[in-house]
Image 1 (cartoon, one colour):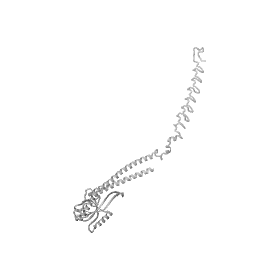
Image 2 (tube, helix red, strand yellow):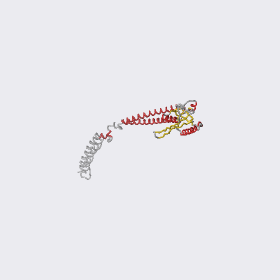
Image 3 (cartoon, helix red, strand yellow):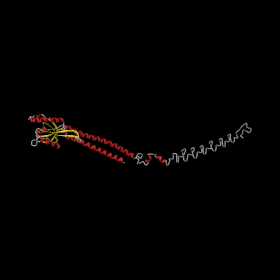
Length: 342
């Protein structure tokens, strides 16, 4: 009974897991679909906003814009973000730079690619050297980046403000954007998000079919268990002679008290030979022997019985035999008395 209830709960858990797997798979599919549609222009078509043109037209960067920008002047690196797994396994790092755009406004840039970082460092070194020499040829040296305009977290923004203050750059001098162009946010990174969501969806579908197979197997086992539970030969609670059946045949237990009438012993089969209480009258060596059998009250036609056959030799002999009373019809021509027995 307890085992059946346990199986029932397990089947319920499998059903719940199947439902959760399907729900998560559907949500992952919808998430990938909406994410792709929402970023279709940048992710699929590769469309971006040319931020240099926007600045030249008097516009400004807007949060969420996918932009392309030529960077001519690097103010310097003001922060570094380290990523770890479980708090101690290194998982990459990002560098944060301050840059000056063509209209003199300032904005931050987040980089992860080592080649981009090296290029930014090269531009940074040339910028200050050329400025000190009042040489503006640095405007011919640039790096083009692509990314998404995002807000900075409070810690990075604090480092950003400190760096600007240290360089005597204030809002009174120029337009400062407390935004960052995240160059790590590439088209490939968007595809990675979709791949992750679709992988989770595939895993959930796989788990759904695994749990479905397990639930089917469990249902088959439960059906067998129910069938066995209804079988008295398999369920000890339905077998009244279960204790005796382990050591004794039920029929043997009955014969010990009330023998089967066809078995020898007790009140035996009257047709069985030997050792019966009341023996077969047609069997030899019984209490009351067969009158046609030798022994006891013997067959009068058998030899060597208590009362012999009068037609046999011995006892009261046959009158026609040589012994006792001879045959009077026996004729002997040499006998003067006619051959008759004396």
